[in-house]
Length: 483
Image 1 (cartoon, rainbow, N blue to C red):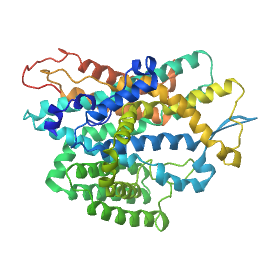
Image 2: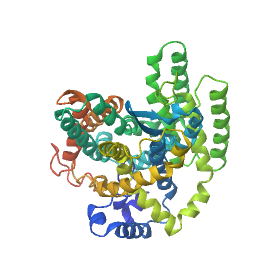
Image 3: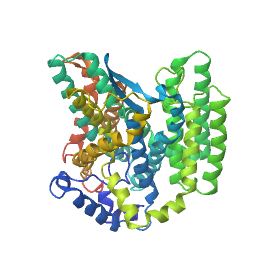
Image 4: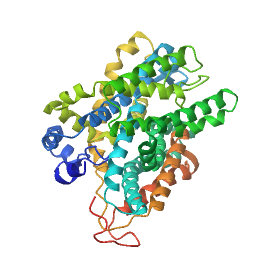
């Protein structure tokens, strides 16, 4: 991997977002000057420069997953305009049979497993340079936090501006809260992922020392937490945001170490399928793998061992077909399409619900066009392809235009990056995003919550500054090579 990084002209293009193996974003010029054709041409050039030994399946799973998340969110939402005003209906609650569809559209386990793979590859590459742990971890973590914080900062800043503007215009604060909360749902994943990333090197070391024992220990911890919840201690369940998602992240670590493919993946998928079916049919866990409004229990918030079993089934099944998928991705068209999606993946993820919320707002301004069809009725289902197509037609060019934010420049060489600054920024980012995902932007100061907004913005500012040569207190020219 180190040789690939040094020798390949493709490497400078593939580090962005939550992974070091993800193509960078496309520039605004690609969208405004030459339109979609130029963007495809650029993706094709990147595809031609890809080394033969690259694991393209990692990028493919990331692209496939983001598309599933986007479409799933658009289908779950069922805004309905009645004489009493706009109703925000969730289809999982409206039509319980749709809860089985979450077994297709709940793909966050794939994200965390891909993240585990990526963190393992990048940490091993950083560690191989032979620098002291503090310097290695500081630089590695700074790079990871920057690639999450900078794109998120623009989203948070945009919604802070919207919140202040609507508050000054006298808009009902409840509407601001609901709208921003709906648009910012995706940031919960980044809040949790950021915390898991802080522990990434420790999880790699845990695998190197204990192998599958490190995964089993996390499952055991998650099981104890679930038992505590079912015994009457519901607050204990929040500990499983760490244990459950760390366990799924550890599957990615196993994958990166060559221990989760072929027969092993198949066996894990079969065993996990039996376990998860048992947990949701005989056991006390709900069928839905995401939260359902009004439900007595959730597998997702906080996560449960049922979600671990589901994730293991999902990941094991996907890795069972890895060899065949790699053959498909060796073809130029399939690989170019994968690069195209990965080039704007953070933008798609962060902005797809903002586009939906703004489109609903625009519809209300013209009398609620398209919002008067009763959810779950035949006409509603018949118009879902149109709903998705309209949202996609708006989101795609918007994401392409915003994807330049994903193209974060490598850290300057010769600068020692403090791990404590990176840790502080990562924790601030995580806490702020958790508050925004839970309660939206609305608050008592100019119509916004200054803590929820301020923490991510401060983290983004600190990480933006980290990319400037000479920002650190000490320089070590020649000690730390170029990223």
